[in-house]
Each structure stands twice: as structure tokens, then as C-alpha cells.
Image (cartoon, rainbow, N blue to C red):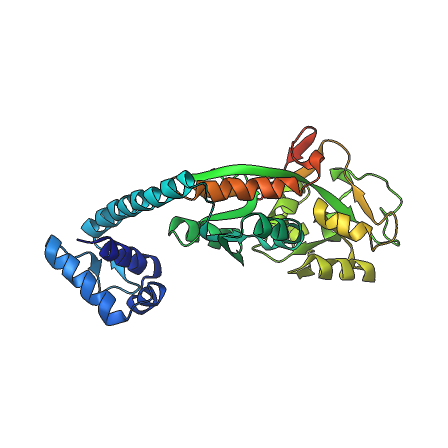
Length: 314
């Protein structure tokens, strides 16, 4: 039994496909298949039920896979101990970030992180929350930035900042003259939403949960995948929309005064966290990433003193 063989069976379980697993391990499929077959022969058990589509582990295979992850994690921990002893923060790091955070956060911290930690090969991908959690579970990501709290078993959450919700009301909107908004000012048939799958959309719906019923939901006709499109639709008289604070900062520089406004206290807000698997390594990179991000965030957003976190999850 070798570490390489254990990596191969984990890759097969992750991808549920021998060819894709081989590609991810940078070997040919025959090589990967042969090594897994040798491991099964050595152990005297069948790890994968090859008759099922997609490929599934056998009952004993599930136990072997769980133990294999532990062994590989401990092996990699030795590598990290050596790096820490040398004072190095280095290595490959796969980070996912939800789209409604990526557009405003990445330009703030990315250049700073790369310059401070040039030996870290940071690979970033925009993904929605559901996909992120699945990839974390399967070991395809090192960490992710998304809205919390999640309350997921095995997932560690490190809050980075608290981002208030802001309202965008065009100049001809009924609420344009208001300096502050309250939940009671909102009309669900007047709010433009992001497409399903975006957690900010779900947060807005949860914020307005007392206003929503099945009849009202039918009135929400226009949706989009970006805040930019929602703003354009709002300007054309299709309603108002809500945006996160960092996006609102950008809008205040280009939109007429009074179109972007806060909510009255306690302000609705979202908690943005850096998450990773409880048993994950590369803690030094995770801590460096969190520090770099928080250094670029307005200080008043680092604590939740007078706000109410609106979870995107039910």
C-alpha cells in the first residue's frame, strides 16, 4: 500500500470517473486503474462498485476512503510543519468565492496578498455556495469566502467582516426622498432580485420574509445575475433593488446623490467568512489570507455592533 494509491482512490471517489480521476492526478487511466486494482488485490476487498453509474464505493470502500483521507492529511501536515519551521508561507492554495462578494472584495485584497506572499500559488474560482460546500467536502478546495453562518458539520467559519444591506432607489422612485429605509418601506413587488442560487437573493427574501407570500412571489418578474443589470432595470422604472455595502460604495461615486441609502438601525447585514474543513491543513495560508483581507476592509465593518445578520439560509 502506498500514499500514491490512496491518492488515486480518493481522486476516483471525488470525480466518480476513472478517466477524470487520472487526469486530475496527471497520469494515464491505465496506470491509475492498475494501481487501484493492485491495492484491492493486496487488501483482498473491492473498493469501488464498477457496475454502478456514477461509480460508487462499496461499504468497506467507504471506510477505506475515510482512513485514507486521515493518512494523507497527516502526511501533508508534516510538510506544513517543515514549512512553518523554515518560516515559509508557500504552496498551492485553491480558494472559492461567491459572485456577490468577488466583484468588490477581490480588487481590494488580491494585489496585496500576492505581493506579501509571492510563494503562494493562489488559484481563485467564483462558485455558488452549494457547489463550494460540495467541493470542500470532497477536498477540491482549500478554503472559500461566502455568507455565513452555515452551521455545517466539519466546517470551520472565520468571520471576516459584516456588510450592511443598502438600497438603490432611482430618482423617480417613491422612496427616493427618504434618507433611511425600514423593512416596512419595502414592497416585494417592487424589489428586483438576483437569480436563484445567489445567496444575497436569499438574504433579501429572508429580510422581507414577513412580506412574502405565494401571491407576492408571483409578482417578482425581473431577475438578473448581476447588480449592474439590476441597477439599469431600476433606472428604467422597474423598481428598486438592494446591494451590499461594498457595492454601494462604488455606486455612490457614479450615481446621483440620494439614490443609494442605508437602512435604519439595527441595520440588516450579511456576515462574510473564510471557511475551511475542520481537518484542513495550510492554516498558515488561511490566517495570512484573513489578515490581508481584513486590512483592506473599512474598520467599522470588522465588528457587528449595531446590526442584524440576515442569513441566506432557512
